[in-house]
Amino acid sequence: MIELKKSAVAFDEAQHTYTLDGKPLSGITSLIHQVLGLGTYPDASDFVKQVAIPRAGYYGTSVHHAIQYYDTLGIKAVDCEAVEHKTADFGLQVFGPVNVAAELEAYIEHQQGYKPIANEFTVSDNEKFASQIDNVWQSEEDGGIWLFDTKTNNTDYYPGGVEALKQYLSWQLSIYAYLFERQCGVKVAGLGANWFHKGKHAMWLIERVPDENVAKLLTTEIAPRPDGHGFVYYFDGDASELFGGALVEQPQEQIVGKDVVDAIADYLLAEKRAKTLKAQLCEAMKAHGITKWEAGRFTATIGKGSVSSTFDTKRFQKEQPEMYEQYLKLTNRAPSFRITLKNEEK
Image (cartoon, rainbow, N blue to C red; front, side, top):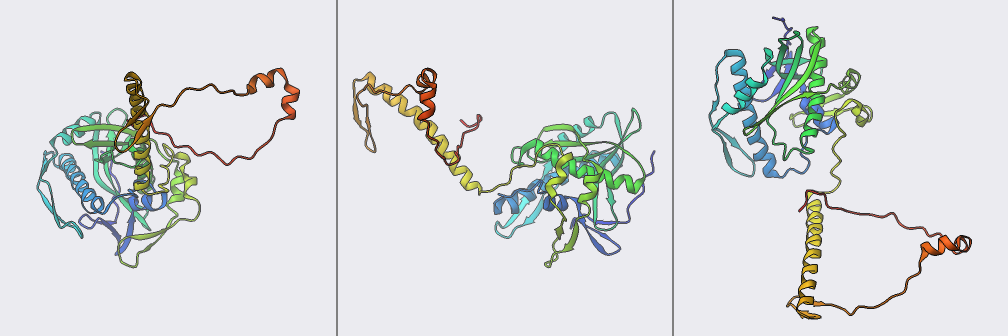
């Protein structure tokens, strides 16, 4: 069994804060959120912030605890009691109770071929940052050390979906690996994530961000917020330049509100639907020999057909190329703008 050097950092689980000799340290999650802009919910409503996200956090904590009890004590503690949660605008909420037996069984399945070395293992640079690694596993095949994180996000609502979550994990676990190797003197063989959500589960291998990118991110300076809640982060440079080693491109910036996006999408869908309905109405009028139909809120008219003349530009260019060049006129046009519905829109 490998002996890992424990950190002197103290972790307060109730407040989810880290301190070293009384000095507060920042968690890695906040660093990634604030500097890299990953894993955030920019359009979250007050209800989502005050109720939905804490409820999801309760579920995630329940899964984490079940895994920790199993790895450290060998027991399957899967029934989690209900907890009360006070909100500013939505009164007293009750989360749970919840049973996470399915999640624990999936975790045990994922663990095949590895043995647990540590759970909730604290790592730190002993200056500004600290965090806890969910699972430290050792490969039974070659003895290599793997760092795993547990996620319970609903990927249907996670900004950017599964690939964006993997990108977040790439940075999170890469920072863990960087700090772990320097703290314990043990090389990390690989990174992974165990994802569980309401009966679904997956085990992902995660790509490691280059150490130089991680080291640059960790140069970020921090200062306690005046209200005492968290930190302000000061990164010297363009954080987007660090993404050379990440899994996928950063999610696009939300440049307009979700209400604008939804309104445009609704308009495009209605326009598409109207085109289909207009064609159906036109065919019905033709079938009944009607050229004008009064329909209450609108009037539908089928105009008479006509013959029009047009100039065959392509033929003229082909047969009279010199004369065509003489009559060309260059005109500056404004850039075009187009919005198209994605294939999944019905």
